[in-house]
Length: 59
Image (tube, rainbow, N blue to C red; front, side):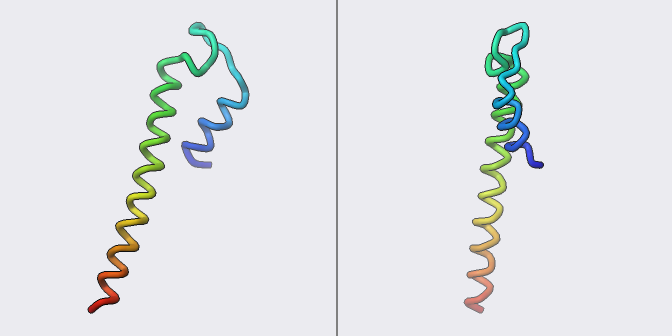
């Protein structure tokens, strides 16, 4: 299970905390932003790998 899936599962549980809905909790907001940036990093790594493969094939 990756970070994005964990955030998604927690959102579906509709937990409440001292700030009200979990989506208002600053720690959860930070976790969600971290998951989004991790997903962006993974996509960038895949794109970089594909570019490297392409450039290698030109040699």
